[in-house]
Length: 485
Image (cartoon, rainbow, N blue to C red; front, side, top):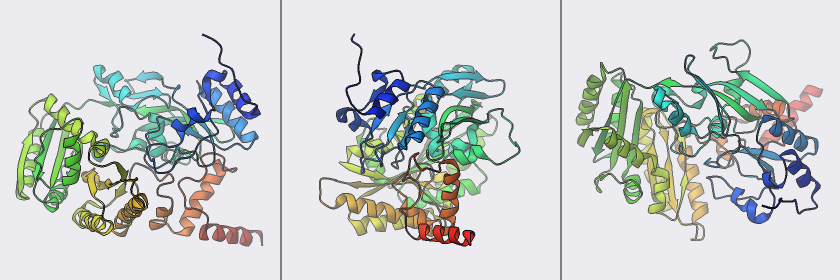
């Protein structure tokens, strides 16, 4: 096999290649870069300057220092499964791909923690320790391919975050390369209340704008002694929604409490893992409880009774692990399954109080009618994390724009009832302007001031998370002027 050589006069490409060991660890031809022009948010696409593949923290730090010294914009990328455009190279960035940094570095079951590199795939962690009776709780639907580094960047959630929390609740320590190339370590010893500011909390969910995570210490959990899963069919979405609230009100905290509406059911039944949901049903709930064996049956009995109180058509308990696995496979392919019934779809990610489910779902149905686009709802009903999927056809002139407007209207509906514009997918470029639904100018400025402390040149993942310049910039300039006087 011949030695691959750099065929460009671009000095920066040559120098970046030298840092990562040569031409086999860098992409810079247009035909190679096209695969990196977007992430899971495919509506916007931009080509990067290059994609480099470091093998360890030291190479990441050297790449970052080079970009910092030569004012080259750059960003980190994992598996590219993000749904809000957080890894899209808006400014022709050098993409630092972390997929080669994919090792499980250590497992300490006595202290219930593991250390992984950012390119380590989420589900592989559970698979690596399940034979010892442990697992990693955060379980986004893309867990079979998404990386833990990307989960940290977006503070990913998943079906079981109702009981176990999102990624930030399972992060014990981080090694981070700052935007100037400095390497820092935060936490890692498992102590819950360390002195000083909560930098772990700040960096988790910062969407790759404050630093590049190169090592992650995570919490692992003992497998629950028992678990049972319930499937419930409702003729009305409102009945299913009220059942969700009443289950929580009864003092039951399920491990997961998921809902799909009729359009979503149509999609999952047309895709890879159909389970035979009735075609005329309006809503299905997937409910899972886990914990010690004593008490599980009682909780299941209460859940069945709540469902019956709200006119459930049929409710059943999984008879074995195989049936439970089929139900979950059907649910977890929900987003991708929309491709079976629509040429294109836009995934949204809002959060609302559980008590507002009927109201907001009704409003989303109105938005669907107003824009003439079908909207499927697949969501984590237990914690009010909605995922309206706007179905459209990009080949039809104007439909892409209508889909974006409809998605924004769905987020506005969430914000109007005291909710948020994202629960786990992040803001990226998709929801920058919608940040104004939940933050005023002063609050946005306070957050961008934090970014400037870490990322003063704004070379790292610029243009993400916050609204485009406008009144915020004017206020910021006024504040600086007042300070100077």
